[in-house]
Structure formats: structure tokens, C-alpha cells
Image 1 (cartoon, helix red, strand yellow):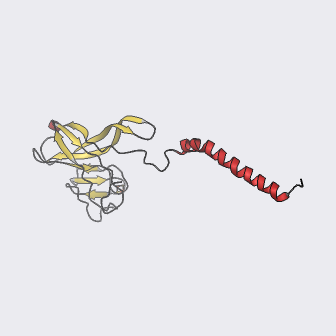
Image 2 (cartoon, helix red, strand yellow):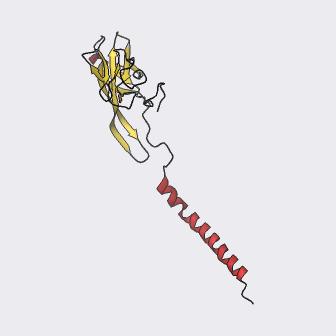
Image 3 (cartoon, rainbow, N blue to C red):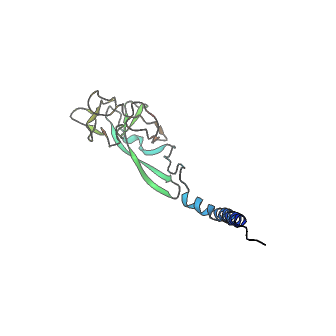
Length: 177
Ligand code: FES
């Protein structure tokens, strides 16, 4: 039988296609394993309320007190971490039942917001944004575009239960990140 170059070329291509397909099927699970969990949300912020201390330690009055917000457990795609510091919050109890919390994360670029005794308000040391004692942004004080972010908080069984929310930075409106 004559050696037909077209036939030979077709067989070569067909062999490559079939071989490549079989190879791809064989390695696909390995590729998936290597890439997983690309494009998936891997680290989640705990949405359950977090215990930030005994309510009785918070005196009734106008002063704010800073508390660390520590999640007992955080899961990501591969690991489970315990006692993870998520950030901090300013908390005050202006009446027996009225309790408020503000995130200590600066809404500009995320630095830690502190209390400025001299001006009786909040101050971010990174770019000098200022807020009033109620957390309202002071116009033209710095680059922060919004008030400090309020966080849900309640007293349950004598304990302060705060829900941590991370908001998008450097925006005028408040959107969860
Ligand atoms: S990070 Fe707070 S003012 Fe820039």
C-alpha cells in the first residue's frame, strides 16, 4: 500500500488530540487541587457576636473605652486559627441600657483611631482625620470621608456582645467589605 502523506498527517494529529485529551483528563484533578481555592472566598469574618468583656466593667457615662475584638475561631480555606485579633472598638454606656460601639478602624485607610484628650474627640494619627466625641467626622480635618463606623453591640447575660463588621475603606458611604 502506498504511503499516503495526508493519511499519515491525519493519524499524527489524531494521535496528538486523543493523547492530549487523555493526558488532560488524567491531570485535571491535580490541577484543580493545586489551584483550589482560587476565586473562592477563603477567609471569612466571623458574623456571630463576639464577647468583649463583662458589662459591669463599663461605667455608665460619656467616656469611651477601647476594647480588643478577638474572634475565638477563624476558618480559612486550609486552617483554623484561634483567638484572632480582628481589630478594636470604642465602646461606651451612656445609660444603663444604652450601649454603643464604634469601630477603631479608620475609614480612610484602616489605621487605628485613638482618643485625643486635648480635643475631646477621636483622632487618626496616620493622616490627622478627626471625629467628634460622637464619632462624626470633622470637616476638613483630614482625608477620612465618613463618620466612624458603628458596630452592633448588646449586653447578654452580663457580657458585652459585639458584632464585628469590616467596611470598605476610603468611601463616603458605608459598605461592608
Ligand atoms: S488612615 Fe486614618 S486618616 Fe488616613
